[in-house]
Image (cartoon, rainbow, N blue to C red):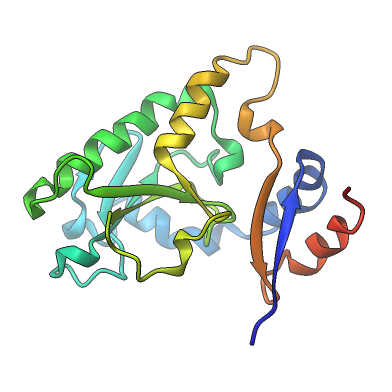
Length: 198
């Protein structure tokens, strides 16, 4: 049995531990994402593309059973690695992802309210992407509280936060709580850092 821990990531812990961890990954780790964005791979599967993102089926979906529909919207912006990097200026792109996700799934008979759109934090790879699944699909552990953040909630937080001319965005300022498995690269340092939190 693996030992999971719920950890809290303050902005300070992000700056000292998590950001350096993310920045330590070589660009080759997400070269497969670059290949999708440049249409070198998976081009025939892309359901939508524009200057900001692409939408395509996730490899977990068999492309047949609509009850297990699983897509991803992957942003083209390299500055966006995780939810921490999202700003008010990205609001239009996030709304467009939501709009185009519903447009893309009409061919499968899925209508408004039939999708769950969410973002992982911590993500499985550090290139901002949105998971798009059929609303009743529950066969994936990544939809747990503390890991999955609904796109509608992200949009709402940005709308309430507004433009931060000199300050930080809501996602830079907030403390995130999430579960880490004992084999995650951040596990030891985050458990140690959490010993000092109240």
